Length: 335
Image (cartoon, rainbow, N blue to C red; front, side, top):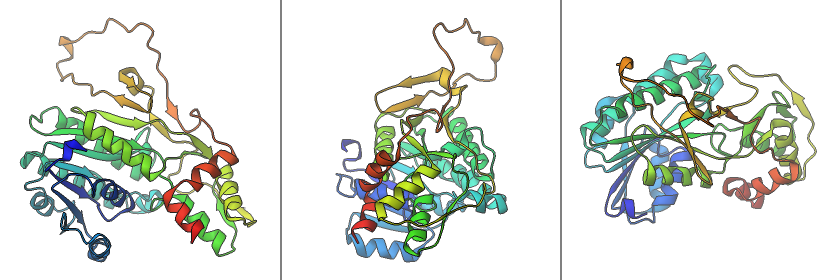
């Protein structure tokens, strides 16, 4: 990417599945330096040995600690903020930890970006931030609100957001669980067979990050158009792919789970632009002086909700094709 030519990129949560996917995409770019910021020294060492690349620099720290993230941001041109607590059930039991990482950590990272004159910061968000019912979703919704609020007063640093559905094979997604259950010949545990989730590959998710870095303006939220499927079809597809016939066990909906996930709310759809692969939600840039604004009404503008129930639904064969082309899962199958 020319945008990174001779520039420095910082990836928070850079040792997680998402951070590593972004690193893999940009390590061979013309960036001058890529900084990995995370708490896990073992994972950092693994990455250091894997790449053995002088372009890579490692910073041990925690986004909860404003000093450590500010230090890592000095001399940085671009930030991708992926550090987060994202396990829905865990956040239900430890909601304050979700607040400390997802809310305060995001505040610290954006503040560090602004204080160090970073050109652009892209914040990783989730479909669970739309109409949130769980602690993880609420904390990510607040992170989005903080990003948008700060974008209104940020002159030198562009702040924008990428919002994702389920990234296949990433840490915490259901696919690695199903694969583990198949390999151990135990029943596949299904919460609700009719529950639907968006399906996005790590490669597709990185293309959304690239798009946000290239096109993002203050307060923009980017969403990739993605298909979905039911948990029942997903389980059957993975079983067929692995040539297994494990029994299934319906265990019921877990803490904080929804029947379907939403990437764009009906309210957001009224300030939306659309391209072939992406949606962009524009920031509402009005201030609190509402008497200065009035609405004439919008012709031919109909609100809609974009969710995992009403997007393109994949059948078993289509899901199998998608899974077999996924790099993380393909590696499991080929092994």
